[in-house]
Image 1: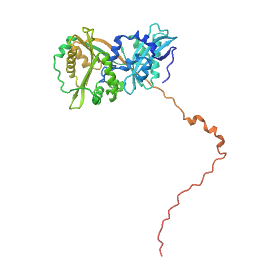
Image 2 (image 1 turned 60 degrees about the horizontal axis):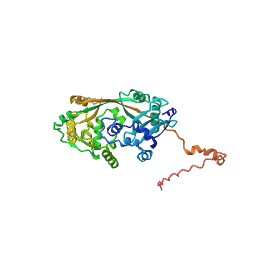
Image 3 (image 1 turned 90 degrees about the horizontal axis):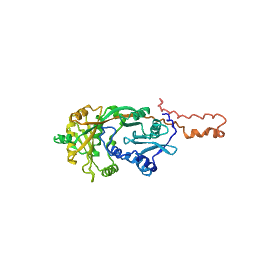
Image 4 (image 1 turned 90 degrees about the vertical axis):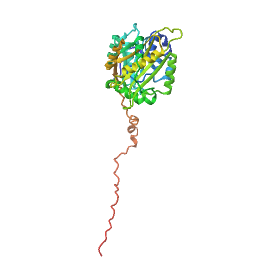
Length: 387
């Protein structure tokens, strides 16, 4: 891949002195989006993406959290023009995602130039990334044009839905028929991986490049996620439906519950859910939704709503959500592009030293005379001579 041209601004990592600038664009809704959003909309593994949240931390802390933190700013004459935040999408870091790109309206080189410079810098500097993905609101036409200008192509469209508190109470009255509802653990990683693979189209599966390790949580990740949940006043509940005949998982849900604040007990709570159902078992949608509604109403009996998403390749889910009168909240576009980094061809070190010229005096003046070719003697065959 040819190196991308530099458009004039200086790209450098995010530093502590840039936090004041970042706070101008990091609203509380941003932190909530970081905690609950997921690009795929169908991945079985849902964790608090702390590597995204850590992008706002000072540089010394970022060094401890590498390689998960990648945040850069564009600076021109000491004035910040914009910033970008990227993070790995899978464990082997073959797929990376662009979390956010922000360009100041008063940028000297224009929004398109600064945004292109930030994106192309990440495409060139993250050598381990083979594929890049991002999710953008379909109403942000300028950002979609910026991404398409840099080689990103649309893959799928996601729809955000909200189930009201009245609908949740009505759904909770139904007793779900889930005899094999199991809690999630690392021992179930292979089952969740197979379910996630069957629930998405091949082109999406190839871009995400997930494996079984992506559905396992390390001990340190569990501790960090638990601490993040306590800090953000969140609680998570997850489970999957096991099919004993096929010995496979056919349904999965991850529920992120928002706890009410101590001084804001009357505040309306918005919970988030991630749902994965095997395409051959679409009858699970009413059962799993009723199970989720019972958990939500038990946790927060007051008025609270539930948000979840669906993809355009999941028509059964969208039909069911329309049937229970869920409200559409927004649409986003999943975009991706591949990156090929050219490996420089290097000659062996000894060839670069040119030893043949340096040691020319030790070369023989004449061609060497070939030596004697020794062969093994033929074995004497003993024969009896007649007398």
